[in-house]
Figure (cartoon, rainbow, N blue to C red):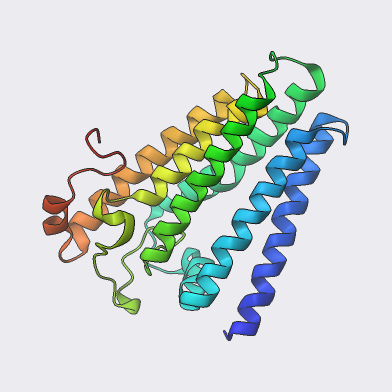
Length: 231
């Protein structure tokens, strides 16, 4: 797969993701004059562009890995269950609930300043996850030991401070989402998503301990999985 083909696939995925998000958000909200929906979709687009540009310039092979990893034979069976749930189904439910909440006014509105702050937190957390992706050339979309790509332990970037910084950024993004949408009900899928990521972190960490040479030594250097000083 050459770089031009990677670019085409990446652009197609951008378009599909954004169209799907916009359709779900605004069909659920029942109106187009909903600034939160436009801001959230716009932020998602910006984050996707930045993260993909970083990968295309620095490690296009990782894009290939992330697109094709689900078809590899050594993907952990449990991760084939986790990935669609936490990456597709729960986000879809969240967008539906956020839109319905905006339509029917189930939750009290938070001040715009608080919502904008939550959106900025979401962006910063997304960039933190992008940093983790940039630092780790084995940052795959599915959990597997990438022996075909010379999988080794990564100690640079945010991996100096925690063993799974990508998940840390994603979890903070999820925590900011109900606040941005000013929606109490979106806390339900948010808690489910965060629980899923925490479980996946533990399972992935166990896999790396058992199967990736040098990871147990790395654990002695970096003790915490997601949050330094806590876990």
